[in-house]
Length: 507
Image 1 (cartoon, helix red, strand yellow):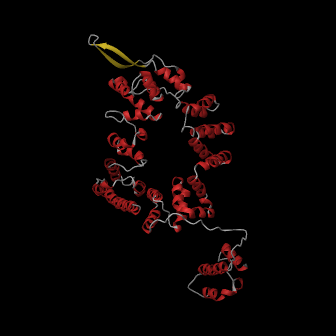
Image 2 (cartoon, helix red, strand yellow):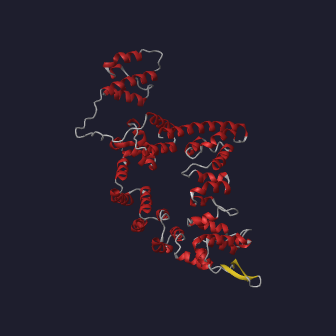
Image 3 (cartoon, helix red, strand yellow):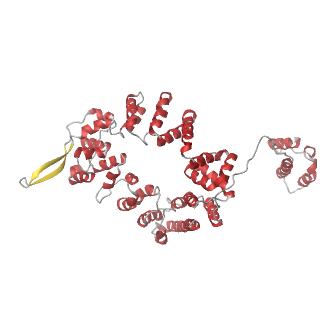
């Protein structure tokens, strides 16, 4: 292979400094090389590249494959499920070509539901998609059948397949293995893997996740401690309180603040108990007799103190005032937003609906309604969040995930502007109602540069059929926007037809 070294050396030095000689090349292909070097229309660089191409192919033809006698290849287990139809396969190819994630998810769900598997030649592409997107791995493995498990040995990116197949076929039997894997990730993984391990452990067993963190806490640096504390928020409970309260005296201010933020989610923590003790005498229901004592009237009384305890300002409560609140009113606003809404049910001995009605009666108490809603969002209290969907109530889009899906669409349309709705609407798992879709797509028509093809591709399963006929007539801002919106409408119809064809293929 000396001839190849001569070619490489010439490439490194450049044809101005070194020219290939005939005796440096290959006698077997001398005729082909002579034809190249005799071609006067080619400059020396073109001649060199042509000679190198001939030499490369000659070299490749002479390479013997590596022979590993110890390597064995098994045969894939025979499939037990039927393959999907040619029509469904063609649609899957279109989805993959379009890179439409939502439609791929839809196709896989329907294929799995029908108990079908994909054609073998598409499995590698799907396995690559699963390597990129954990959410669809189980569906891919189910649709990939036995051949996907067999193929997983040939690519390290596909190692997830066997674990997913085991979890699907025998979920109870994989628990101990999962726990071992999480422990290994936590103890030996890189920073990102350790965060993932803590997150998964917290979702599966909050107490175990806390134990994992406590065991390594002393060895972590300050920034890592602060990051890891955030993973305790899901599943936060009374069981976390004792350890978190030991961190309130930590040397690091960042760790103190992180621990305090978590303790403010536990109703029985010392800081939350202190907040409740402060607001308890300030906000009271007072009943008095009216109409010569023949009737009674109950009102909400707010008696601000002359001074708040200075200690609470060390817990994250801010000193501030603006044109809408005095300094003391602003302090109370923060305290109301900090305590669980359920506290008021016990304190005032009545229902959320009645409590909100009392707050809403007077101007001096009405200003605290947004704080009650903020508390409902913070403590994920659905029944309180629902009360703020009624006419005249302040509403925050952050409360949408707390609402039953049956009223989410209606609340979005009646309480919010389109730009506030869209970030939450795209998270819904169900199809949008026609009024909600109209609201969102009108916004998209006015701002077609902001809402482009990827937006429609990702949300095509949420767009209802009934809105399609309205798209072309939606108002736009000028001719450029009108032309671009027209292009978007064409694309929406194209991928909607693809969606409809998927539904028909698995009907």
